[in-house]
Structures are given as C-alpha cells and as structure tokens.
Image (cartoon, rainbow, N blue to C red; front, side):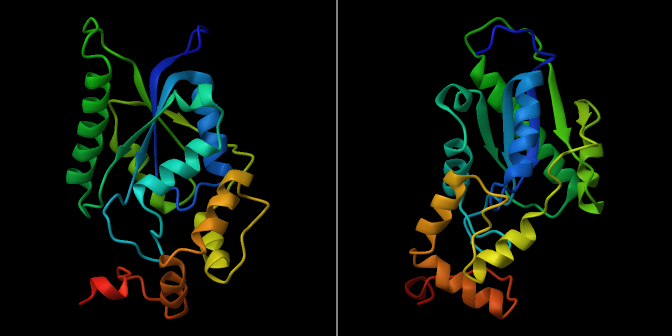
Length: 206
C-alpha cells in the first residue's frame, strides 16, 4: 500500500469489462492515484454467457489483474453484482456489496469511517447510474484520453479479429486462448444471428 496521502480510502468503479480495454485501464490508473484501494464492481455477474456478456467473473478478473504489476494487483478488489433490472434493487446490491467488502476488510481494525467515492465517465445515457449514489463523492472524468466502448471490440472478436490498438498484450493473450474454448464458436454463431439470449453448451441443453 502506498504511503503517499490519498484523498479516498476506496474508489468504486462500476463496469462489465467485457472485455477489459485501455479506457478501463485509464480510469483505474486515475483511481489508484486518488485512492488506496479501487473496488471494481463487476456487473452482469450471473453465470450465463451471451454475446453481450461472453466472459465469466473469473475470466474478467484474470484479464484485469494480468494487466497490472503484482504490487498494484493488491490494491484492486472485486465485488460481483448480478443484473437485477430494477434500479432501486441494483443500487442496494451495489452499496451492500461494497460496504460488506469494506467491513470484512477492516473487521479487526478500529471502526473508523472509510472515505469511499465513485469514479466514472458520463459517456452516454447508459451512464445515468453514476448519479444514483449521492452518499459517495463522485470523481467525474470529463477528459479521458481513451473514450471507448467495448461493443465494437466484441463485434471484431466474434469475427475473428483481436483489436491490438485498444487491448493490453495480456488481454490479447487471454482472448487468443479463449478462441480455443468450446464457448467461442457458440458465441460466434450467436453473434451472426444477433441472438443475445444465453449461450448453452450442447451437453447442457439436454
């Protein structure tokens, strides 16, 4: 942990990271400058895979952590949250997940209130959720060098192309390996049909 004073004990960054790209990395780098720890709320944490959510929680954690050095990995924490399709329930789940993690992380320490904030970028209408956590000070990023959506990266990937400009070498390596998985051709087929329903392995459909 850095001995340099940080404005926050924790900064929360909410995303799906499907896949983890350089704009996500830029936000985390900024968060690490301002907070001792960064909590990544991994959305869409349900088990089902789809063309919108092709990678599991474990795979996303692997992609993210592989992109940082060992010391930095210790400052990145994860709170998985499933899709609830109800803002009130989802906000409660996020706050409960973050607060439970912080409480467990400090269970043997004095009960000092930890300063927690939320970091994010209002990229489009889907970013409205950033305003749903008034108790967390918002670190709004207005001028990100890398403003990027994962949607076209996934589209390229399903067509057999791995974007080398917007993905770290570690993520590229993961995606190459994933192409050899039993899931990849099924996701490709679903993409060609524009079918965003859960992808099921043949032996799971029996």
